[in-house]
Each structure stands twice: as structure tokens, then as C-alpha cells.
Amino acid sequence: MAGLVAAARARELGAAPVVYEKGDRAGGSMLLSSGVVWRHRSLEQFREECPGANPDLQTRLVDQLDEAVDWLESLGAPVVARDTGNPRTVGRRFDTHGLTDALVRATGDVRLGEPFRSAEVLATGGFGARLARERRLLLRASPWSEGEGIAYALERGADLSAGMDEFYGRNLPAAVPEEHYVDAAQLYGGRALVLDAEGREFFPGEPSWSETDLVQATARLPAGAAWYVIDRRTLRERVRDRTVAELVEVARATGGEVWSADQLPFELPPSPKLVEPPYLAVRVLASVTHTIGGLRIDAGARVLREDGTPVNGLYAAGADAGGIFTGGYGSGLAAALVFGRIAAETAVAEG
Ligand SMILES: Cc1cc2nc3c(=O)[nH]c(=O)nc-3n(C[C@H](O)[C@H](O)[C@H](O)COP(=O)(O)OP(=O)(O)OC[C@H]3O[C@@H](n4cnc5c(N)ncnc54)[C@H](O)[C@@H]3O)c2cc1C
Image (cartoon, rainbow, N blue to C red; front, side):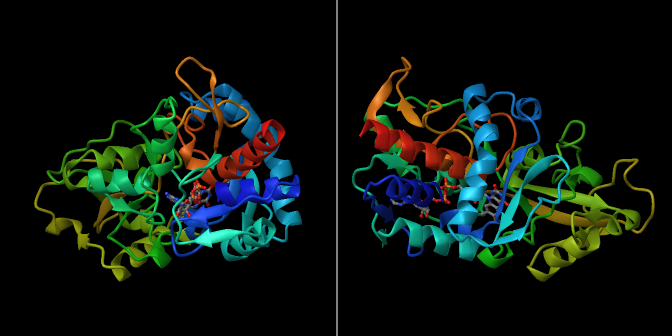
């Protein structure tokens, strides 16, 4: 997304950008996403939830997101909901196919199937595909983000942000096809008794609302797999617009392992989460959506060296840029949008 945004904004500012797209379609992971472009309600809340991030970048995101979302709409991107459905956040939900079409139209020159050779704005989506392969985790994202933007900048003297081992992802029931990346996410870890393959509770305390911390902990287990054990009462509870029972049904339908808990090869530890029998056990596998660490940038999206000076003529946005969500979770679409626009504005002003 960030590359299309940067190019659309640069064209608006009078430049003649070209987008090189390695994949066979435009839109990257944005096309596969839920399309919710959001921010935390306040900078303080954002700081609290992503404490390791760079406050200058967080401030930019909070200050500029609303205007940037209006701009997306002005390009003809179709809005499907004017709120996020989450009281902690503000934003809009877009139809991702319509959003991709609007950005491609505004960009003009998008060359599919052509990896970039040289670039001013790096926006290759981080290194989620490589991370998933190296750590033997599932990938829940478009398959082309191998870290080539980051490698290009490192060769030119760039520095990295904090959080290079962090990623955003979801626990999935199986290696589901792309069309199930959104609806198969098992997002009720906070209501389940969460166990490793030996029946041990491995996650201390309660997971955060996004469950990104639980997914990262699951990823550290052998095979990146855990069990979510739930009772009958939990099946009736709602996770946003669906019940847990519906989420479990998608797990079953997409090839996941959904067992009666008495078939598990270990005794269940006592838990206040298991009240109303019978109990069900769903096997979940950690998946990577995108990396959180990346290139160190400043608030103008300039790629920085270790000494804090910019690498001449090089800018980064989207998941190629790190330091925005370190230690937590935020909207990758918002980062791609805000820093994609900023990268174009700085590049045009300095070019
Ligand atoms: C299922 C799912 C649901 C999601 N839901 C949400 C949501 O609701 N809200 C939210 O904020 N975020 C969501 N996300 C995350 C969001 O999609 C990403 O954070 C966002 O797309 C990142 O933008 P980006 O520009 O960095 O990467 P991308 O959008 O992935 O774009 C990177 C592009 O670079 C291309 N590329 C890679 N390497 C090269 C190369 N060498 N040369 C040329 N091109 C290259 C890739 O093919 C890709 O098209 C979701 C993601 C998924 C997969």
C-alpha cells in the first residue's frame, strides 16, 4: 500500500513516479486485509500500547491520519464503514479492491512483475515472508515481502529500528488459503485456557486486546502451535461481529483440529476459564502478517544512518520502516498511508 500511496501523492505534487511491483497484482497485503485504517484515540494511549516506538513517528501518525483518510476517500476509495467497531480506536474501513483500484488510477504507472532495481521511496512491505520461512511459521500476508527494500537501504549505510524480532500476526487453525486470512483468525485466546503441546500454560497473565503478544508467544513454542481450550459458555460470547462458536466453525471448515478436550493427551489444569462443560480444544498455529522492526526513519520518512544523519535521497514507508509500533500493535495500513504520503512530500521537496 505505502508504495502506491507515495506514488499517488508524488504525482499530485507534480512528479512522475513509477511503482515497481514484484508481485503479479497491485495492493500487496492491503488487498488481502480487512481494510480498517485506524489509529489509537490519543497519543498517550498509542504510547502506552507501543512503548518501545519512536514518539516522533507516533505523533505524526496520530496527527495526520484523519486528513490522510479523507484524502484516500477523495481519490475514490470506497468506504464500507465510518467507524472501526472498536471503542479503543478511530478510523474507517475501506473496500480493499476499490482502494487498490483508486490508488492505481491515481498513480498512473504501476509495473507488475518487476522487482525494483533502484528506488527513492522503499515500500516493499518488510520481511514477513522471510521471517515466516526462517521461523517455520505460517504466512498470513501477500507472499512477496522478503526484506529487499531493507537490504537495499542497509547497503547504502542505513540503520535499523528497534523491535527487529517482533511481528504482527494471528493464530490460525491451519495453513488456510488467502480468502480465509481474515475470517479464520482465532481471536479468542483471552477467553481460552491456552496450553502448549504438553498441557502447560505458557502465557503469563492476560493477552492484550489484539492478542499480538499471545501470537508471538505461540510462535516461540515448538512447531509454533498451541491449544485453545474453551467451555460451552465461551462459545456463545461475541468477538466483534461473530460468536466464538462461529470462529471455531471456520477453524473446522478450513481444516483445523477441533477436538473434544477429553481427547487431549494430557490432563487439563484447573482454570477459572472452564466453567460450563463440555470443553472444546482448538489447535492454533502462529502466523506472520508483517514485521514490526525495519529501517530507522525520521518524521519526514528519511532513512537514517546510525549517527542520525539521512541517507541522501532515500525514504521508506509501510513495513519497510520500523519504530512505529515497537512493543505492541497498531494499524499497518495507517502507517503505510501516513508515511507513504510523507515520504512523497519529503522526496518531492528535497528532490
Ligand atoms: C489478512 C490481513 C488483514 C489485515 N487487516 C488489517 C487491517 O484491518 N488494518 C490494518 O491497519 N492492517 C491490516 N493488515 C496489515 C496491512 O495489510 C499491512 O500493514 C499493510 O499492507 C502494509 O503496507 P506495506 O505497503 O508496507 O506492504 P504491502 O501492502 O504488502 O505492500 C508491499 C508491496 O511491495 C511488493 N514488493 C515486495 N518486494 C518487492 C520488490 N523487491 N520489488 C518490488 N515490489 C516488491 C509486494 O509485492 C507488495 O505489493 C492486514 C493484513 C492481512 C494480510
